[in-house]
Length: 165
Image (cartoon, rainbow, N blue to C red; front, side):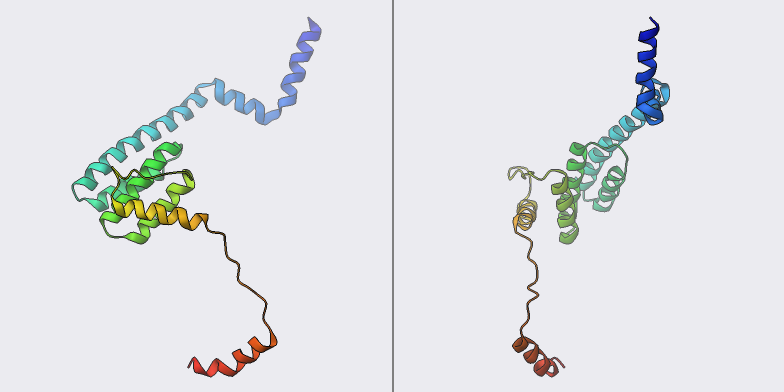
């Protein structure tokens, strides 16, 4: 019996202080509270996205963007919800003709879901095009500048600098 208790104590001492804290968070109401907070954030975010969709459909684009941004700033949001939020944000920016911001939203969407494919039956052609552009940009190899210069290049550069003025 004593041997079993010593073994149990040994196990507990091996997990250390951080391990004990994690166990306490999981097994106590404090741990439950953190889980509840994240669930509430998730539910609130999903509700905000529904409202943002309605705002966008009625032309209240700035209000939609505000709701989406609030959602994205919450802690504990699932990647699925982030995907929906960035898609809706991209669509809203397209509706406002803010194509740079739309590209940024689509880029963040692709960061979360690299294999994302738009639905041509549901998504407008402008959104589909931006997604395809972003995917194409990501698939191109990164170009590094050629740093080799020759004496002839340097001589040309020195002689032709005055043409810039």
